[in-house]
Amino acid sequence: MKQGLLKNLSVNTLQLIVNQLLGLVIFYILSTGLDKNTFGQLNLVLAVLLAAFNILSMGIDQLIVKKIAAGGDVSSLLSLYFLHVLFAGIAFYGLLCLGSLFLPHAHSLYTLLLLIGAGKLMIFFSAPFKQAANGMERFRLLAYMLVISNFVRSCGLIFLALTHGIGINHVVIIFISGDIGELLIGVLLFKRATKITFKLQWNATAYKQLLRESLPQTGVVLITSALARFDWIFIGFMVSAVKLAEYSFAYKVFEMSTLPLLSIAPLLIPLFTKMFQHADIPINKLKLLIRAEMMIAALTSLVLNICWAPIIDRITANKYGMSNVNTIFILSLCIPLLYLNNFLWTIYFAQGKLKMILTSFIITFSVNVAGDVALIPFLKNEGAAIAFFAACLVQSVYFIKQNDIPQFNNIWRPVAFCTICALISGFVFRFFFNYSWSSFPLSIMLYFFLLYITGQIRLADLSEALIFN
Image (tube, rainbow, N blue to C red; front, side, top):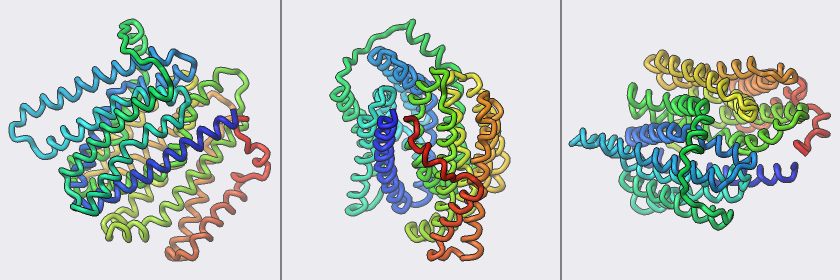
């Protein structure tokens, strides 16, 4: 199992690195090539569509992964999920088109929503095949399927930047082309790699059962989708597209900084599902895993803050660096909490505690929305970051309180110690060395030294390094 996990992790990590690099190219070209207002409008549309299509999945995507990982029939599950996305996607886009009938002189923002939405509909149609590949643990296939759209977009935008310059009309065409390519090529790759006979077969009884099982997760998806982009939407409509451009830039880099989490998270669902089917759970190795995750998370936060202002201002011509220093600092505090929440969420999901998970996300969503409404009008982007941090912290506390594994009662300690070590190292770098690049290695060395004296790095861990063997 160890070799399989390491192989899957390496493939998934490579895919994420490629995808993140392509995404970075796309994001950089758009953020520097478009004016802040247009860039903000584009991000507002993407935020609305991301939330909408995540909600339309109704949590069935994660349930499909779990069922296939547990040995369910791939063909029938794939057929059920594809029919769901087909009906839900067409109905949603039909409502969008219907809305344009009531806007005879459609606002440019709504027109952009319709155009980008057509492409995102194609991505939605490709989702069942990706989730099936995930559940089958065919991560190499999944990697190929996931990079198609970003590859097409990045190539198109690079060509555009070198020849004609960046314009929103050309950007829309490139986005739609990439999304259509991901659907067509992704389906072809799936059929060739798996040899699974895919036939659309409607089974009302099985679909109703699937909906009943996914009902608690539907609430989670509804809340997490709104939680993920509510701040973007609120800033875009209540403050300005320019402020959204600044916040979305900081948030995008923050999301990209969670690459290690994105790398391991998809692997944990099938792995934990199989693990918690047995009574003998490798507690010590799970505790080692969470400590390793916390050390990586806090190190990411430290490097992100050290490098932010000098690098971002240089590559964006002073558009997004110093204006986002406070925002990125607050968001970076969320990184260890995100790792912890994902770890505990995966355990609870593998145990089937969907109602408890739903309750946690209701609480989290309420805190985030209340914080956004209260803080954004006064603190703007920093207010949104504070609200997001508060929501992550509340979710962590709730998940820890719901833990029924005695050995995990002190799971908060690695989070606290690693975060404090990173904060001390960061403040030493900022206030005593004044962002001197020569002192960057010293700050990292100080971080690992503090980890060692606080017991987060232990020599005995070397004997436990073969995780899940």
